[in-house]
Length: 282
Ligand code: PAF
Image (cartoon, helix red, strand yellow):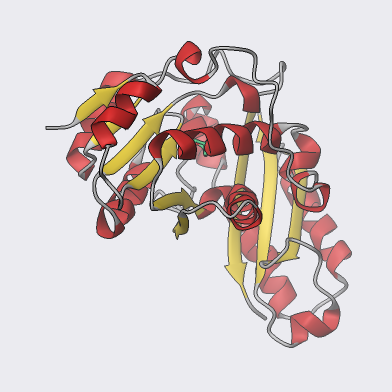
């Protein structure tokens, strides 16, 4: 029987004595990508706790906090079917009973690039809520999807630098049959946009292939990738190839030596902002 808990005190009571909890933090509006994270948590920890909390702190005032789909009943059904034992679904006042003055600021070389450049403050909001959720749930293992590649890296670095007693596990990105990475924000797409949306993954694949083929300098290839999306009506924020280990640009020598790389992209299609990434080596 899956339990639903709202408050931190009640959560602590229910989880008292559990020292191997597996945790999947979410903002709800769940899809197969989230459920695969729940299954990964179930394979490593018990009980499995999933949180559902749309975290105001990580949304800029211009972003979609109010519009973000809240589908609690359906989410609970899906979580139950995926083997979740407990849903932690705090209200805003349960998690932020007073203004959250203490915040976690990731180092700017990781937190202010890519997503952090285009969504200032985003990772401060993410780190702050994730640390708070970790303190509430006290998991042994927490699973984050590779779809939010930079988020996974930022969380890993936070856990390492703050010596948090939790193992971070990465879950692979789930894709629709045409290749679109599953995301809660895909629901914003019109039918025509949904058809077009796979172009982000395709262009990242082309960028990867061009880098593998060794043609041209990296900035020129990245610019060509952005141009090809722009020509299809997208507004790209970035399309770039970085080192997996720190998200900095690889040198030509590192590329040639087989440094693990990741092609990352973020672009707006109509009013929907999509992100995706592909790991590879030359
Ligand atoms: O990836 C998400 O859904 C959110 O950023 C997270 C990790 C649940 C924090 O609010």
